[in-house]
Amino acid sequence: MYLIDTSVLIDFFKGKETKQSRKLEKIIQNQIPFGISIFTYQELLQGAKDEKEYETLKRYLSTQKIYYPTHETFDAAAYLFFSCRKQGITIRSTIDTLIATTTIENSLILLCSDRDFEYMCKVVDLEIE
Image (cartoon, rainbow, N blue to C red; front, side, top):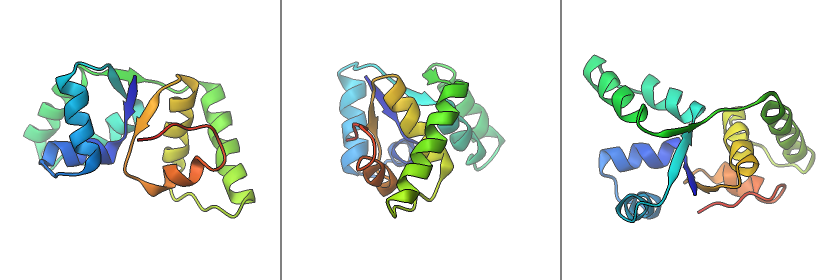
């Protein structure tokens, strides 16, 4: 099962051809289960260009499996950020550490295009595509 990151969904919705958007298309065509984090849900909605797009996105997202963080998720994400920093790795977004931790906690594969996730793979057992 996959967790789809925000940037992949944005590219997919815009019809932008990337390795990850093509993979998402195959996931959908083959009916492979996937979901999104609640953070991706928020990021997509806040990026809507107008009220109509906001409502369309909200309707679509309400049909998706959404993963929610727990208190332990926040602890683990903070420790991931700390561990990366200790190894000289700068993670640009704390939200990305929460998405990575959610992926790990739920034994998912993260479909992403953000290089911060590649850096996190050096510190934790995060499976990305």
